[in-house]
Structures are given as C-alpha cells and as structure tokens.
Image (cartoon, rainbow, N blue to C red):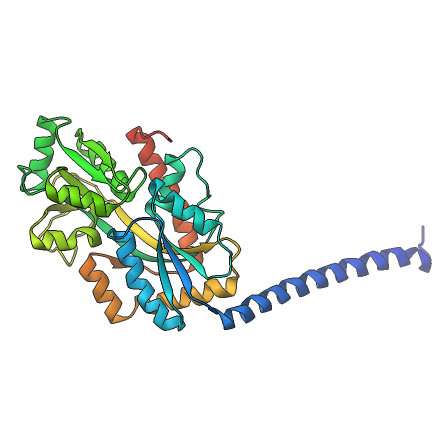
Length: 340
C-alpha cells in the first residue's frame, strides 16, 4: 500500500525529535567539557588541602610533604598537609571522599586505604573505586625488614630460623589493621611459615619509637620511614620486599635472594581527589605531578627515601587500583584475615 505525503509527516517529526535530542546531548557534553576546562584555567583559587590519613613520620606523610612542596611551587598556591589518622587510614579517607569535589582537597592514597581496607573493614565509610577520582600514581615503595639490634639475627634467613624455633616469641608492629606494614608482614608470615605476634599502632611513627626502644622485635615498613634509623644503626635492615635491591640500600638483599623465593610485595602511593572533581582539574593536577616526578631534585629525594617514581595517567591509576584490590584481597583470604 502506498503511503501518502501526510503519512510521512509523523515519521519526519520523530526523526527531527531524535536529531534534536542527539544535538542537545552533544551540546550538553560539549558545554560540560568547556566548563570543566574553563574552571581548570582559574584553578586553584585558594590553598589546597592534602589529606594524609596517617600521623606524621610514616612513609605516606614523608612522600606527601615532598610532593606538596613542589606542587605548591608549580600551582602558585599553598598545599597544606592535613594529617587525619585512625582506623587504618579510613578516617582520613572518609574526610577526603566527602570533601567538595573542586580540586581544593586531595588525598595521598596508598595500598592500604585504596586496595586493602575493603577486605579489612565490614562497614567501610567510603568506596575506594566510586568515592574518588584517581589523579596519578606517585611512587612504588618497597618495604624493608628491620629488627631491633638486640634480636639475635644478622640476616633474614637467621630471623626466619629463630622465629620458627620460637613461635610467638617475636613481635612486630604495624601502622594499624589494613596498613601496608600489617599486610606485608602477614604475607611474610604466610610465605615463611612463622608465628610472629602482631601489635597494631595508630601510625608508623609511634610504632618505630617502640621498635627502636626494644619493646618490639621487628617490622616490615616502607623504606622512607626506616631509612634514617637504618643508617644511624638504631635498626638493623635484613632484607627488602621488592623484586630488586634498593639503590639507597645496595648491600641489603631482597627476601627472594634470602631464600623466600618469589616474594615481591611493595607499597604504593598516589594522589586522589573526591569523585566528581572536574576532568579539567584532574588533568591539570596529573600534568603537574608528572612534571614534578621527572625533576632531578624530586627523583633524587625519592631515591634517598627508597622510593621509585611511578607517575602515570588517571586511567592507568584507576585500573591499577582495581587490580590491586583483587590481588591483595586474595592474599588476605589466604592469610585468614577476616573483616572487622
């Protein structure tokens, strides 16, 4: 049956509506994109708060302060450190997640807060994937196995042998449940078949005080936090947890070299912003962090601290976080660590 001209009018009207809707959506997204980058041109308009979800003195704090100084210079605006410790970094992370998404509040995230806490806490007050806009990975930080000099072990192999012969006698401190030091040491216990008592603290700083005084036997902590104590002789370094030796501690073997074959566990640190932060601001921050991480001054500072620069795109950091959640969730399950 042939259609008359009038029969096509409704069809033409529908097609016109579809085109107008498509055009409207395109205009909307274009306007949003232009607005985002226009806002980025005037950003930052006031001091930036960089939340560190742990007390001063730990690797997270040390790296955050090193970055904040350079970021302040590059953005021509103050970057203020806000230490918010507690609950394995969850208190500070929640504060960052609930902050206004305007780029003036950032957080130094790390392995514990962004990848481990979901498997540690039943009622986590933030979602490491949905609550944040990843900006950039900053550094990979292998940990160092250290002991109080009074512990009768001059190598990782001797420490493992002593721990096996004296189950439950040695103690180790961590920055709290779900922290990198807790996770890595539990992984070490699992890999070596040792029984070492866990003593959680509210940060690496107070834990190191007790380790140096002899109230604790050992610890596996990020290199930046222990480097000065190792160099001064207050702590004895036995091994590093990464796949390669640290340039700043070339004489200290890896755990793999020490007989714990295949052991490779490093912490990592990166900057995140609250979810909903405009893409233009995220891109501006990412570009600045990547520039900073290539400067000889900061690379030398990180090398001194035992950290390895690892800046990349926001998309790469987002994918990395997801993969680390899966990886360490499996380790926690094998170690028998139940959510609290």
